[in-house]
Amino acid sequence: MAEISLHKPFPAAEVAGWDFETDVAIIGFGATGACAAIEAADAGAKVMLFERNSGSGGASGLSGGEIYIGGGGGTDAQRAAGFEDSTEDFIAYLKAAGGPCVDEAKCEHYGREALNHFAWLKAQGVPYRGNYLPGKHIEPTDDSTLIWSGSEAAAPFCDIAKPAPRGHTIQHMGWGGGRPLVDTLEATARAKGVEVVVDARAMGLIEDQGRIVGLVVRIDNQNRFVRARKGVVLATGGFVMNEEMRRKYCPETFKITTPIGDKDDGMGIMLGLGAGGEAIHMEQFFTTCPWTMPEPHAYGVFVNVMGQRFINEDCYHGRVSRCAVDQPGGKVYLLLDNAHFIQPMDFAQMTIAGTGDSWEEVEAELEMPKGTLSATMALYNAHAHEGRDPLFDKKPPILTPLDQGPFIALELNFQTSYFSFFTLGGLKTSAHAEVLDRTGVPIAGLFAAGRCTSGLPAWGHGYSSGMSLADCTFFGRQAGIGAARG
Ligand SMILES: Cc1cc2nc3c(=O)[nH]c(=O)nc-3n(C[C@H](O)[C@H](O)[C@H](O)COP(=O)(O)OP(=O)(O)OC[C@H]3O[C@@H](n4cnc5c(N)ncnc54)[C@H](O)[C@@H]3O)c2cc1C
Image (cartoon, rainbow, N blue to C red; front, side, top):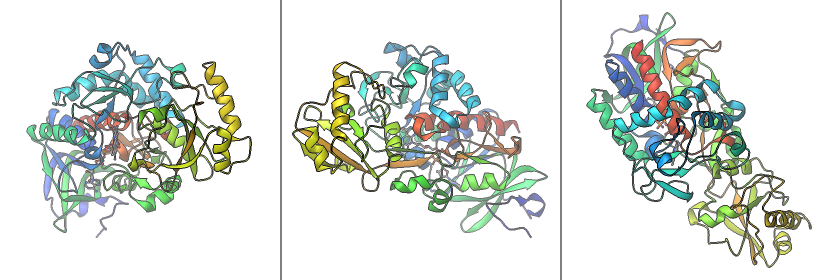
């Protein structure tokens, strides 16, 4: 008798009897699983969704519910605010954001379909107010729709694609739009007849002559055998809470201390690997320390422990934070002058490391060699007065002199400040959400999407808010369509 294992599919020939039979079986009820279920049901398939928690949500339910959408001339919210957004610019940005890890086929597919995807989300009942909220925001503070959520207006991205804001958030007052987003998708999925089984943890896949034909789920402490006539969808999320996997695949994350998500233990990635799949870009992660709150802090300058700048600070807070974590010395400093300093929020756990009436005094208080930080700020201010940043190409109005004393250095410490993070690497899938084997051939009957795969948000340095849920919802749909096709 074969063992039930994450690492090797169980042979169908050894299944004594099927406890459940369905066309499509989906593992995981976050945004990805919900969208896969809706599409598979719409294609006429019988759909069962297995979730190990006692209800839907996962990381999706904890999220801001912001989705990265653009192209096609612009969404209604973009156009109403005067932003035109061509498909070419949108795709060019997606590709630049993917950096060295980019999956061009996924960027092309989503880039061409994003406007239709937005219409699809609305058709499932997801509400959008349709307005634009100017300024720098991590998530809308009210129920607004559209914000700048990436590095679109900053170098080098603004030279690659015409900038437009693309973060679209469900109408919901304040942060935390992910819960109502999942609730809405869940209601739609249930209305379409999707059968949801909670407290049901997938422990293994079932294989018949190279095809995935089902799964084993643990319910009430017993193994139950599920036959999936047409396909199985992995929608299980990432691996940020699995220290062993992080140590093996993503050790840089141990520099920082605040993983965010739900259980995120990488089970789906293990299941896919066990079936012959490949995991890619497993070293990639998103991180951010919320340094742009309060908003005047977005005008600050970052230096490392040697007093040197390392990034144009007008780009997305997550890109700045990710580049910060690359710096030596376990911390970086956010420099502000009296015109821009406000007491930082407690939850960011950024501390005041140095103050002074001149940048020389701040430099001395931080015990940096003379002429390091002070020279950096003298050069920065001289250029900022001329409206240019020849070193990093930071743009006005965020490029502004910091010359009104007293001056201050806030410490962003990798171990004690709030550097939240989640993983981006996962199974290699096609632009139609088929799990690919190590030769690039789809594994029959097996589909995956969301953070158990490497998708649109492939590169931590290029991440923009909304890219993960764009990837989860859109490629979740592709997985549902593919699985229902059989
Ligand atoms: C606080 C926070 C805010 C965020 N805000 C945004 C945002 O605004 N926009 C954005 O794009 N991204 C955001 N993200 C990231 C984004 O939420 C996640 O990357 C995304 O939701 C992952 O979705 P998923 O469907 O892949 O996984 P999940 O939503 O985590 O769903 C996976 C589900 O699978 C279940 N599962 C796992 N293993 C098994 C198993 N073996 N058997 C059965 N069930 C299983 C889990 O219990 C879970 O319910 C945010 C993340 C956090 C934590």
